Amino acid sequence: MAGTGSQGLKSWAEAAPRLVAVAAGREPADLVVRDGRWVNVHSGEILPGTDVAVADGRIAYVGPSAAHAIGPRTVVIEARGRYLVPGLCDGHMHVESGMVTATEFARAVIPHGTTTMFVDPHEIANVLGLPGVRLMHDEAAGLPINMFVQMPSCVPSAPGLENAGASLGVAEVAEAMAWPNIVGLGEMMNFPGVAAGDATMLGEIAATQRAGKTVGGHYASPDLGAAFHAYVAGGPADDHEGTRAEDAVARVRQGMRAMLRLGSAWYDVAAQIKAVTEQGLDSRNFILCTDDSHSGTLVHEGHMNRVVRHAIAQGLAPVTAIQMATLNTAQHFGLERELGSITPGRRADLLITSDLVSLPVETVIARGIVVAEHGRLTIDIPAYPYPPEALGTVKLGRAIQPADFAIAAPEGANQVVANVIGVIENQAPTRALTRALPCADGLVGMDRAADVCQIAVVERHRGEGRVANGFVSGFGYSVDCAVASTVAHDSHHMIVVGTNHADMAQAANRLAEVGGGIVVIAGGKELALVELPIAGLMSDERAEIVADKAGRMVEAMRACGCTLNNAYMQHSLMALVVIPELRISDIGLVDVRTFQKIDLFVKE
Image 1 (cartoon, rainbow, N blue to C red):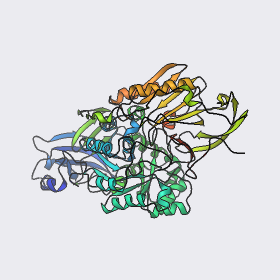
Image 2 (image 1 turned 180 degrees about the horizontal axis):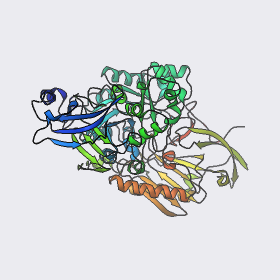
Image 3 (image 1 turned 90 degrees about the vertical axis):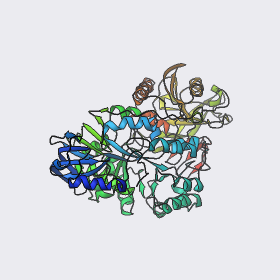
Image 4 (image 1 turned 120 degrees about the vertical axis):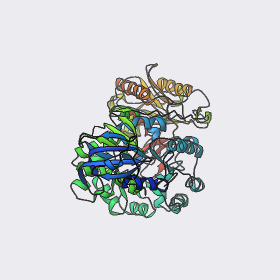
C-alpha cells in the first residue's frame, strides 16, 4: 500500500528485492533484534530464541539466529529473552480528544508502544469542514508512525437537531476517498438515518465501499431489534458503542467487528469481553480501542498498553489481548500485509517488553527505527504548523450576559417539573430524568441540594449570540461555580455548566477571549484554564504542558464539588445528540431515544 500513511517508507514492491536478499543472507540488514520471545499473533504462540532482521523499514527475516543478516553497519539490539510484541494499534480514536495536535498525540503515545492509529477527525471537521480534515490528513501522513485517517461521515452528526460549523456530504466523502492517507469512513453516527434508508448516509457508505475502504460504525442504542438489523444491512463494518456483553455478541454474529473501548471516561471492555471469556465467541472479531483519551491519561497512564493490560486483567489470555490490539485491527482495515504482526514484509513496528501481563514498554521500534526507550522518545518530531484559518474560531458575536442563562418560569408557577440530563459515570449514555424545581421572581431556579444545576450551549461558529438552556444532574457542584468548554461533541459549540449565572457568563466570555479551551470559574475567580486555540479543540503546546493544565482543571472541578471520574469528558459529551438518552444542542433539549427536540418542562 505505497503512499498510504507511508511517507518515508518504501512500499513492499520497492523493498522486496532487498528483503529477499537480507533473508537469504546475501545482504546485511539495517537492524537486527536478537534473542527475543516472539509473540506470534498469527499462530497464537510464544517462540523463544527468535531474531528479527529489518531492512528499509520492513521486516525481512524472523526466526532462529539472524547472524547471516548482520554486517559491519547493522544495528544490533539484544532482547535477552524479552518478549517481542507487534506495535500496538488503536482501531478507533479521535486525536482532538487529547486536546493536542496529531503530532503531539504521537509524541505522547509512542513511548507507550502505540505505532498505529486509525483516527476520525470529525471534531475538527465540525468546526472547519473538509479543509480541517485535510489539515489533519496531511499532518498524520508526515509522522514517523502510522496514523491513518477516516473521513468523517456525520457533519453535523444529527441534521436538524444541531447546527455545526460545517456540513459534509456524499461529494466530500467521495473526494476524500482519493486522498492517499484516507483508510475509510469514520463512525456512522446517524444510525437512525441509516436504518431509515437516508440517501445521504447510504450514499456516503456506497462511496466508501466503491473505493474498497472500511466503513466505521456507531450504533448507540440498546435496541437490538429491527433498527439494529437495518443498521447492519446499511453497511457499517464495526461498532464501538456497545456497553454490554449482548451488544458485542450481536455485532459479531452479524458480521461486524466489536470494538471494545477503554478511554479516559469510557470503561466498556470489562462487560463486553465476557462474550469471549465466558461465552466463547471467536476473539478474531474483537478489537480493542480507546475512542477518547485526554492528555492526562496519555501522559500519566498510557494508551493502548493500558487497554491491553486492562483486558488481560478481565481474564483474557495475554496473547489474545495483544491480537485484539494488533492483527485483528490490521485485518479489519485491510492492512494485514502491512501491519499487525512481526512477520516478513510488514512494517518493522514492534516493542520489547519483559512481561506480557504488566506490559512495561522498554523499547519501541517503528519502521525499523528505535523511536522510544523506557518511556522516553529517542527521536525528534517537529511541530506541525497550523495555518491562521485554524485559529480564531470562537465567534460569540457579543459579550455573554448573566441574563442569557435566565430560564423563564410558566406564568404564576411556584414550581415546575423539568426534563433533566442525568450523567452516568464512566459511560457515554445519559439518563432522561425529571426533577421538581423551584420558581421565584418569574424564573426557574436550580436545586443544588438535589444536584441539579444549569447547562447551556452557546453558539460559537457564526457569532449569532444564541444560548440554549437546560438542566443537568450528576456533576455534584456544591459551590458557586461554572465550567465552560469549546470542546462539545460533536458540533463543538460552547458548553457551560454552572450553579450561578454570573460565573457562567464569565466563563463563556473568557473562552472567547483566549480563542477556545476549558475554564473553571468559582465565585468570580478563575481556578483553571486550558487554552485550545486550534479550532477551539487543540493546544499548540507540548502534551506534557497540556496534561499539567488539564490536571489543574480536574482539580478545580473537584474543588467545586465534582467527584466524577473524568468529569471533563462527561462535560464535553453533553451535546452529543447521537447517544441516548437526553442531550442539549444549540437548538435546545433533545430526546435521543426519539430524535426529537423536547420542551424543557414536563407538560401536565
